[in-house]
Length: 205
Ligand code: GRF
Image (cartoon, rainbow, N blue to C red; front, side):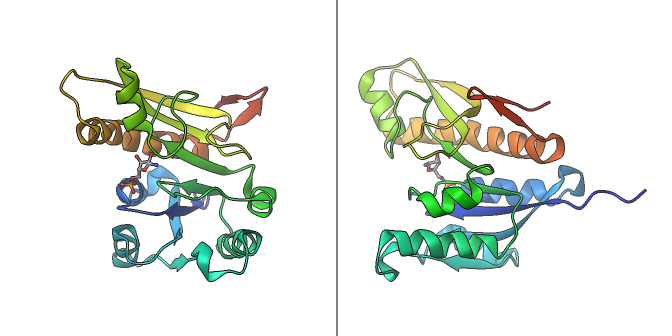
């Protein structure tokens, strides 16, 4: 019997790409069941693109300002992702909200990792907002993206303590360690086992 073809992942990034790097390391093992077939970004000159290129993975950049309108950008991004025929599209620190055209194409298989325990602290300053609020635990949430801001059905959450002497930087780093492990574990399970979503409840059989 031949092994099933590995699932095709397209990863979208805006920054250092440490989540991408963790996925690249995991996908090096054929038993993981997935390969990263392309990496897209909304800006040039970021470390994540260099990691991808060093691993021989095709990259593309769609910057919003390169298009006449946000809708045009959204359509172009959707088209570039579609060229790589992904089974799963992963926003790993991608700092852009996609629009209707992208969600029409990939809304059933577009996931995002956020560095807060949703529904608390959506947006781009999760650890800073959590610290300012004075919470005692923080963490990361992996979810299917919908049309809202960090509002989609939750796949998994991972929790870390908030320490009395934490700064935004120390808390962010502690969350990122747990976040990467969660991302790698869940993406592997999603592609190997599939999933269902009913009344917002995501189940991996
Ligand atoms: C992650 O913590 C993600 O939750 C946040 O940005 C970070 C991306 O980190 N939105 P990296 O680029 O994967 O290192």
